[in-house]
Length: 321
Image (cartoon, helix red, strand yellow):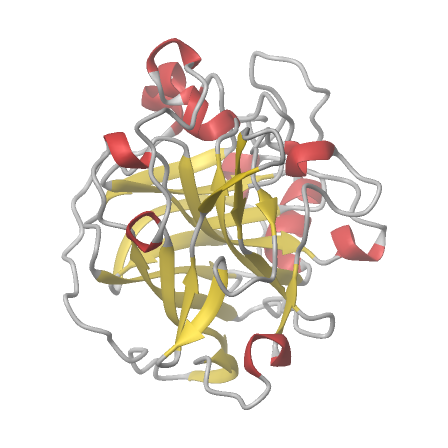
């Protein structure tokens, strides 16, 4: 989710070289409790039932950038994030993030939405020789593709050093996109971002910035689906360590340290602490980049409301005992 305004614009032509084969995932039509994970301890869990509500475990990201940092969150997205209940709320122990159209004093249409990140102190790293799993149960909006042009929900992680150095240093700090989907497509992307990026295209660096490295998978919409990643350091050799994306308990694609081929970049991705983010963006480099001719989104056909938003039932972190 973080990057430059040009992030992802060259994504579509590069799909064959960047992404793995499209594989349909079996949807879950009901809210599913987290699957048992033998040999793992649950170290953090959010089910939206705390008396303090959202702010017990999360911080609202507000406006159009981190204070004093790159505009439009570095991706070209056009919405402004708020903490208003019309954009982000808990209903029956489910988090709802809803993009909304708004008009300014001159009648110009803009957008608002919601974005959360875990509070400082809530960040996790996979221990040497161990495994760590981060998962969430999510339902994506089921409106038509034409009605979701520019809508960009995401469940992801950033290296905690990003916060420690004043929200600077992307992509060097490391980013794991557990689930991203754009434009109402029935597929999600699971990517990593790392190394250095100088704002130039074509892609470059250990993570092929600005596009990232990873894979994509077919999914259903309007259904509860569990998305996760497993960081596996059990080999105790950074080149054979791996990050695996999991959908409804099925392992879909992986990336290894040797595929990144940069020890420092892999250290940020797989060894250092990361925090979790949930958001629904509107417009930007990724949704634009998958449209013919890099057409600017959202379109006139794009609607707002719950049917283009994202619901989250629970989020959890498990570490191997």
